[in-house]
Amino acid sequence: MSQYLVEGTHAEAFMTMAGTETGAKAMLGDPEQFEAGVGPNIVQAGITMRESVAKVVALKTDPTRTEVQKHEAAAVLTERTVTALEKAKAAIQERAEYLLMAGQEEANAVFELNPSRRFVHEKILEHMVKQAGKPEGLFELRKLMKEDPEAAAVFANAKPYLLNMNPDNFRKVHFEAIERYAPKAWAKMNEGAALTDLPAKYDRAIASVRANFHNPALAAKAKLRVQV
Image (tube, rainbow, N blue to C red; front, side):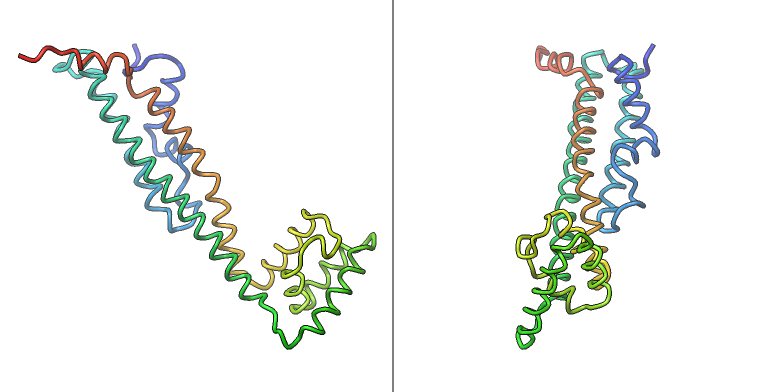
């Protein structure tokens, strides 16, 4: 007999995994692998998940409740857990957006062009256009970025179509320039990008909690109770 209120192999697998620290990390993210700003949110989400699973297990053998009452109580645990996961998800999304924006702003500041050097910058841009049109142009542009910070700044302020470059290649070279000349901005952007994948995990975990903590049809029967 299953130790959970909802029976079946899928429910068994989810509840068993969600009830362990390792399983919760797999579902919600390992706080040690992500930016410190969201660490506490991930930790708390995992704690709430594990504690709720333990209580659902305890409800299964609660001698003071009927089957309907067990599912009614588990419904409360479901909403409590979902609320915690939604809160963590929102914090992660907000942090990801902040890191990406802050990283981009810092990179823009590093690559800000000096108006008094406009003539030089125009000549650098002309040189880049010539290089981009050659078979070995991508290699030459990357070499130029490494050797000349001012050229990197001009490139960062250009557009792919101005250089007749493929947008993907342009982004690669641009990010390489950020990594080289604005490492702190690069770190923030990387951390923000890593966080953008987490909210989808929380959506899946929330759906699984709703499906496997309790049977909504049984919990709803509690509303039919006759009050005396």
